[in-house]
Image 1 (cartoon, one colour):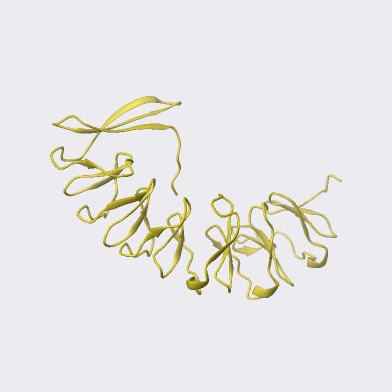
Image 2 (tube, rainbow, N blue to C red):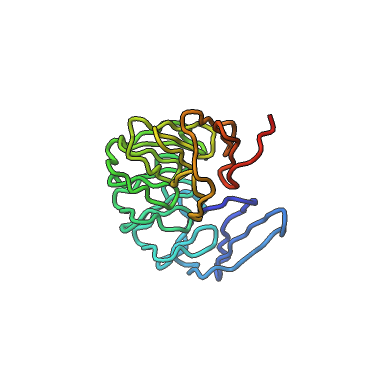
Length: 230
């Protein structure tokens, strides 16, 4: 996953060597030589990306496996070559670079699937992709008409017509029988450990970010049942 932090100052070609100069509050300024050919080196349109005749770089780090001859930057932290799409220096998994395009800062598509950052959504019917809530936000709901997705997580409900998604919940949803968090039933934590036997859907409601309750007690999606404060 791409993490944007600090303040980068960019590439510097000194004729006999190429450097990536950067600064951040914790470590101060840095000037790191990169393995690039100064004679063929060029900074691309979105200038965190650069390349020479053999290699591609993102923020001074080599983009492994990228094809320099066909590589182009298409957004601040998105790029493509003849083979793949890229998010930062990471390959967008299973993407087709020939048709790859950016939707916004989190989503892209190659016409055959949609991607959240570098992860494929494996949509059942990508032609019916649409944003449901939070387009352009970090917490976003989408659908392909058969399933709902929170960011890169697929809600595992086959009862699509009766799924309710909860905005600003951190990824909670329900259908007629189950409550879900991200890509698993809320009865289990994210490691697959069962944390509660029964959740009453009839009385279930979301009370805050990753917080909910039913007639029995309050519930934290990571810690399970807890005492309600009111």
